[in-house]
Image (cartoon, rainbow, N blue to C red; front, side):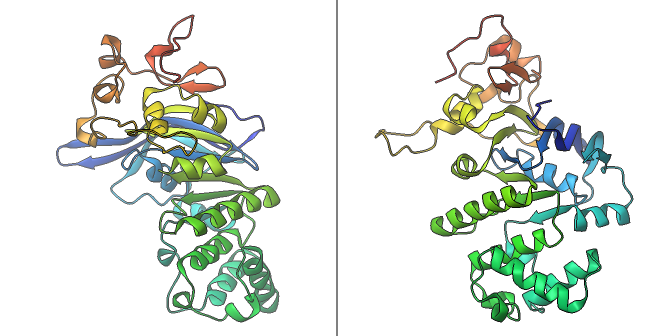
Length: 334
């Protein structure tokens, strides 16, 4: 398991998520371990179907049935939370963990003003009076960059733009000063200029509130701008974990290297971007050994029969047999 410089606020240990079906059990997340320190942003990146959002949902107890955690443990501030009763995890979700979803309309009730939704959330989890909760809600709207918050607090979600709605959702997530914020693709539906504003906002709020942030995305540009460390997922497993500069500039795993090569660079012209051949395997077709081996240009015999665990390489950890050597092979550094 990768270790942060600070004591971990969130610890995920050997997480396994299964989906029972008529044809057998499908494993969607398989033995994933990571931690996030207070005030740290961990970017979790990978293609669609990698298991990123399922991992986030499992932490806050929102796995959709028949999905279930079949193995592993999740700890928040030293307390195990994955085995809590529904009412207990609901309290934790409201008071200690904030959630920012990709589509703000899934988080906001169109029938209620944003102020009512903020005030109800604040009063549910604190002892504040109605006037005090309203003041707190106005302050939060101002903090996340909503102009004229005293006026806009009484408006409805449809009266806000997409970017402003996402700011309201972030305000909702911050209502009771959570220890952990899970942001699942928070900028995907926004245009580039608004994305940059939301990224800046998340970074500032993380540093000011001291919250840990799990940022789930498929966008390496967002990761580069926001995260302290990166966890790269592939087919429900961790491929690489390390500091953001290490992973982006000196990617170790062939999959991470392919992700980096697919990003256009302004510094130099290229005739074509790197392409990762093939596609993510379906849950019922995950190959033996390293799940990436059918698409990997550096695969060799061992990759098809043995599954690699995370191996320390420089400041990162990499699940790749290329690095199971005394002397590191440099071919995949790029």
